[in-house]
Image (cartoon, rainbow, N blue to C red; front, side, top):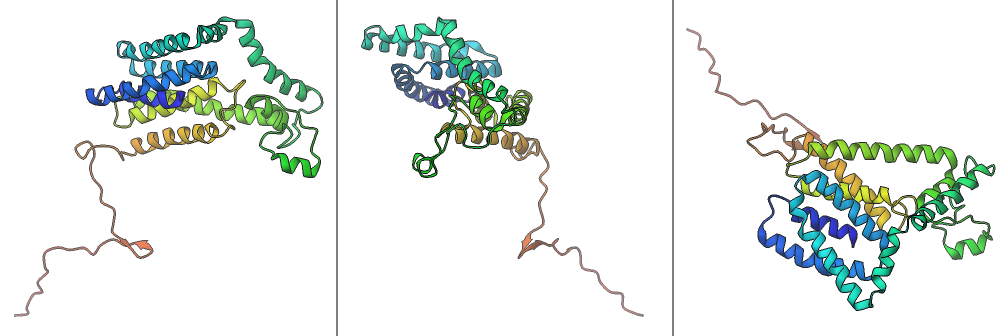
Length: 277
């Protein structure tokens, strides 16, 4: 629901959006926000706030975001009334920094201690027990899995230091690509979709220590899809695929013949042969 709201916020904040579209999106955001808040998902609320900050930084116009926080606050108020204050107590734990630290540190410490215990190269795929079907593990007698919550802890257990370095490199390159290309795509025809996709990837990176944004189903596949979508949009825009006819010269490719391209025959004014006197 947090990822759906991020796309809605990106569309609402689009300067080219029509008033009717914004009202319809706001009408859709309110029940979604209420459902998310009512579920008590604290991680989703924090991820939504991080994605919202990315959009606010990109748009650089904070007054356009008054209605969205108002909708979320209203949803929290309604949820608090329905639950008799229990919901506010749950979200109040977000201010308990000791609990937040433990929630992030425990999955990492499990993987870190496992690497220090003579498993610096990891123990191979499936050692953390993630994505191993229970019926298959029972048949092969696999009972010594070392489980850890979060993709980062599982990465340390299964792939060790090399996997940690390679995956860290991937995340760093993705982060730099998003940061640099977002500024180039500002106020372009693809800015809205690119911004929403980038915000979703940033939300996944934030939840990496204790969550499973890159391996979990269905968010794992969706996050990699968002990253690929953003990179493809940036590449196609640099090639001029989204440019208007007045912005770029149209170069017509030769017509396609059966299995190859063959330049069309040159046509021109007829050449009249000279008649001999």
